[in-house]
Amino acid sequence: MDDLKPLAVFAEVVDAGSMSGAARRLGMSPSAVSQTIRALEQHGGVTLLHRSTRKLALTEAGERYYPHCQRMLEAARAAAQSLQQAREAPTGELRVSAPVGFANHLAPALAPFLAEAPQLRLRLLVDDAMIDLIDARIDVAIRIGRLADSSWIARKLCDFETILCASPDYLARAGVPAAPLQLPAHQWLAFGRELSPAEPHDGTLLAASATNLGKVGLATSQPVTRLLDARSADGEHHRLHVQARIASNNQISLQQMCEHGLGIAHLAYADAAPALARGALVHLLPQWRFGTMPVWAVTPRRDEAEAAKVRGAVDVLKRYFAALPVAASAAAA
Image (cartoon, rainbow, N blue to C red; front, side):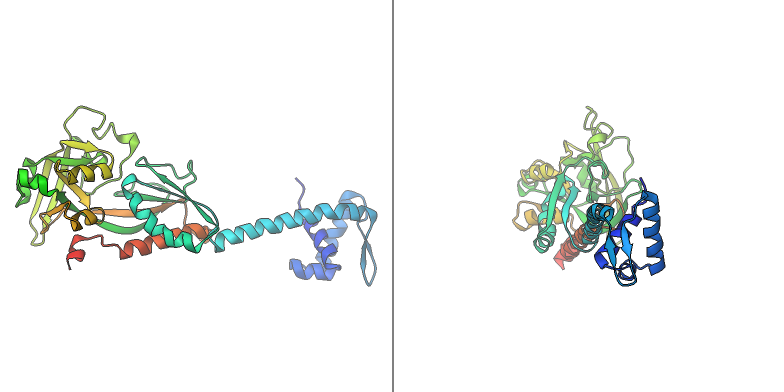
């Protein structure tokens, strides 16, 4: 395709009514504008403008040519304006992905942002599978736990403290564990991505992935275990293997089963807090710490060209989690 700049220069000359006026608009010298028009006429083999010392006038060929150049210039301006709007104001569609267990945080986190940006639409993909950001055109992905090495940009939102929970009914039947060494004797519920008889684990909860369920034991008949890392304030440390009676790749289902008395679960405090407050769950061994669960906002890129909708979404997520009680110790204080 031929260079389109001369067409834009010609349209500006006609709109401005002079070479000098077009030069000011375009940030060019009058001589450069004149040379551009002369080259355009030579290339087309026709005269487009009648020139005099006082004014310019379109030739018949110029009159036919100008509307096409004008539409091209208007389209270019509209394209530039759309990019400027994307940089400066949240518009269009914001595509966010998150694990199923995290979905209850998205409404309170994003609602103020959507209320302030009426031209913004939200497409929310809630799935425990690791959705590909490029294939699904994801703007912001919420990821939990350790992140695999990748070219994506990860910004930490917070660290969820994890705690051990059980229902009052379960504890009435099985007894309340008084020390970490008593935990293996209890019935356990465990999250899918945590389960692996052969895979080493550092005690951090990880996000589930539908592509690796076979590797972690959910697609096999092998007993599955969970490695617990218990630490006390005075430095005592225990690493314990507990066998899961119930395993699932859905954290919400596990918490519901925990509330119905089916065993002990290792949950994020932020998720368990409402059930703790209403007495549906009991916080076990509160003097011990069982690790944290980092929460990340992952985006394809972070630079000066990042869209306003992405910057805004990440900012409101940061503010939401900064105000969220993510640690049992902070809530007790």
